[in-house]
Length: 296
Ligand code: GRG
Image (tube, helix red, strand yellow):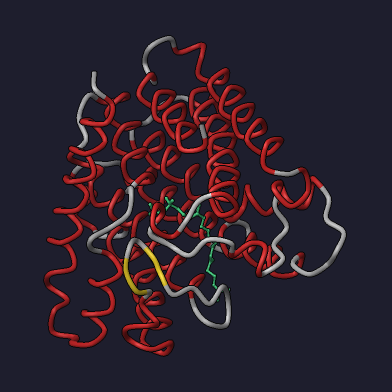
């Protein structure tokens, strides 16, 4: 299989599903404009693609889980909009164009982010999903979205990130905590949602979780390396942000080369967790290996 072709096809599938989902919100004028500007055109759509791919590996289909895949992208997009705000990273460029607050103002960008987070929960809690999934599995997934996006996940990681910035001395454990919470928690949510709705057993769900946490940490390390060595022209977003904001990253602690090694080690460790399942989750390990190409 050609992985790049696969990723492109899945990205297009996610793009059109998201466009169809936000279409009915058109009435809300400027809010709709800010939301749809932020969602489309999108980025790599990694989290939804991981969710679709995991579910497909389990069930041999992906259609039932598409709304959940869109919801996770909405959560991710909300986090990017807020992260870019002048009171946080103060970024001007995102996904190759002006950030939401540059176009719509900080107030509208803040509200667009809030609306996207709420919209994600509106989507995943739709009672129509009861026609396809068991009630207990759906309830578990709604809970997982809450945990992964809140104090014990995305927001908790971001808070630690802010608190640790400027501290001068940073340690490995704190950086790992930040990367696991602010980035790996959403990647993990993608795989766990597919595992729970696909009704895999406990051991398999644990293996998917263990893989996703390692992959998630690696993905954040790659992001940090690129922030240090790449350019806005290549990435479509501001670079040098971590240094400017004195963020606690492995690049800051150990340097670029060591951070690259760590990203690779995390992916290899993660792949090990899926080894007992043979080829079943090959698409996930292929995607994880592929993301490493960005820093080769
Ligand atoms: C402090 C008010 C305030 C808000 C912060 C919770 C939060 C908002 C931010 C979470 C931290 C965050 C933005 C993590 C992002 C990690 C990351 C690797 C982003 C880039 O992901 P890609 O490369 O992006 O998958 P694309 O554009 O491809 O979707």
